Picture 1 (tube, rainbow, N blue to C red):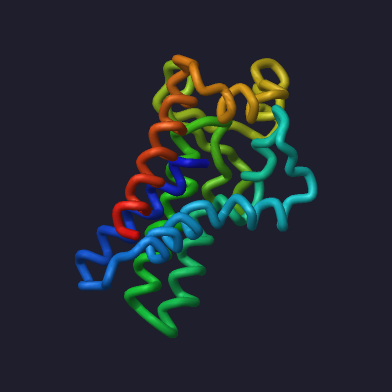
Picture 2: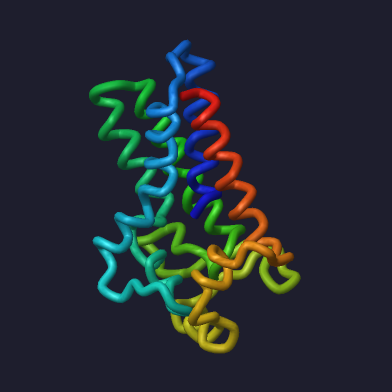
Length: 179
C-alpha cells in the first residue's frame, strides 16, 4: 500500500518539475491518492474482496487491469492533457507494482482474460495462473493475519514489511518537505 503512495507522489513530483507545476503537500497527496486509487475502486467493484488470505480477490477485476489507466488517461485528456499524463502514469504503476510486490499477482488484461500474472515468484521470472491456481496458492501459503503481520509489525526483517515501512516514511518525509 505505501509503495503505491510513494510511486504516486514521486511521479507527480517528476511531472511537476517537467511541466513547471508548483509543488506543495496537497499536490503530492493527490499523487498518493491516484497511486492507491485502484484498491478502493476494486472494493467497490468486487463482490468477494476481503482482508484475509483471500485479499488477492480484490485484484480480479477491472481496477487492476492495464486498461484502467488507459481509460483514466482518455477521460482526463479531454479536459487537461498534462493531468491525464500524470494520473494515467500513476494509475499504471499500481498494477505494475502489484505484479512484483506482495500477493499473488494481477489480472493485467481483464476483462479480456482472467489469467493472473506474477513476476519473480518462487524462483520464476513470470508465473501465469488461472484463478483456481491462484486460490490454491493462497490456500496453501496465504496468511489470514497478513495486515497485522506485514503492516503493523514494526520490528521485522521481512523484505515486504521493510519496503512498506520505508515507502511510508519516504512518502511522509516528501509531503512534509514540500508542505
